[in-house]
Length: 76
View 1 (cartoon, one colour):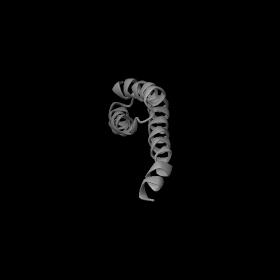
View 2: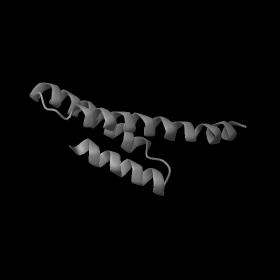
View 3: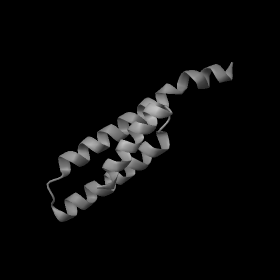
């Protein structure tokens, strides 16, 4: 499950650099591909894929929200 590895990488990048937006967006895409594969193969890993998607979207949203104040200050 590649999206789990990408999620861990996103957490490391969030901790180290504070901006994993592209990595988490990529992880969300992989999570959606994993969900399609799970539905096709009728695997039982749907809970893991759902947690991965939730984390990916949450980290993407938090990294976007984190840069809103600096973007607003840059406009002034």
